Length: 193
Image 1: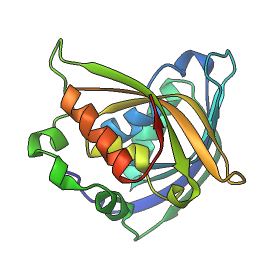
Image 2: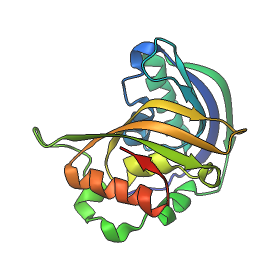
Image 3: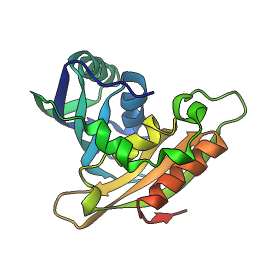
Image 4: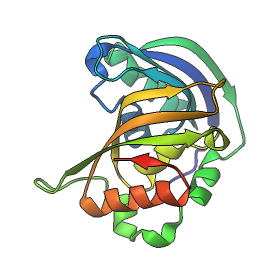
């Protein structure tokens, strides 16, 4: 179950992810461990390179959740290049919930993000994010609503181009992955396996 925040805050940050963490699900962990709502508004990450990646993130959660998420980034030496935090009353999670057709989910699949040993499955694919979805936390939906771990292995998204793309690795039970891919397809997103 997704809980609402008592004292919601909205943060806009730009982070630089060091090369050694590019194979780690940093954004996914901010969502699953700290219950933050994350929308990626711009990103550049070259796959198979030694260069650092960067992400512009819109982060919503309580002040305590955001502080804990920032502390996590600090332990990884992920540099916060820009930071702006404001109070908000808007519930971005309502947008996220409305974009997910929960009829495809069993209650235990929605809540259970723990994987039993030997049952983890991985899927790798590329997804195109059209401009109309720029303000929707689509990747957060894969984590929060489907219990998947998402690693972004490549990305190109900026405000000047029409569409962006992400190379994603999903980890979860087979049915979680199937449901997550169905969610992306129902949004009309193009997926290349």
